[in-house]
Image (cartoon, rainbow, N blue to C red; front, side):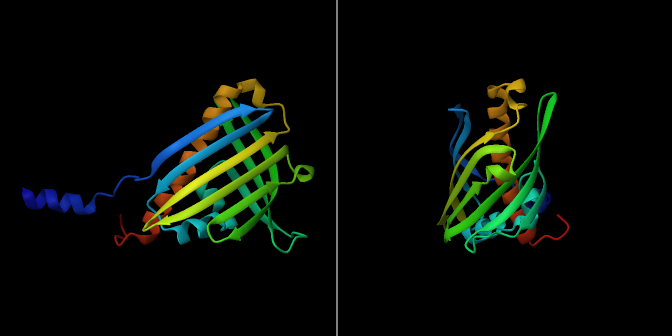
Length: 188
């Protein structure tokens, strides 16, 4: 019996081990804002590489239908175009976002939305990554203002819930991808 239990424990995949230290989503001055502090069981180098792997971003954030790398006039930035599809209850919205992403230094990534090419009046995101052994401490700050009028139809409270859910799901997906890619068990 003990051998059977031990055998089952070996083949059970571990659950997600991320720890949310703080998450705050609010609407202020016609902007949605989020502050997230989270620790995930993924090394910092992997997290940074995954966040900068634009062709695979939709694996992390499923509201991103398509991400394309464009030519940027700024040699220090990577310009990306994202097709976003997000739903809240009975209402879905499709948005286009073009942003310049910069890795300012190891562990610091910033993105600024270009309103002239986007369905956003403004947007800014910042990721600060800190290695904690095999874990990464992530501080994520973002502010954005969709230009389309669909968001008020579902209400700011529901929109804030969707933003919160999608942010947490992104890091859950990142952790799951890391576990899948580094797991010694190929058939698990």
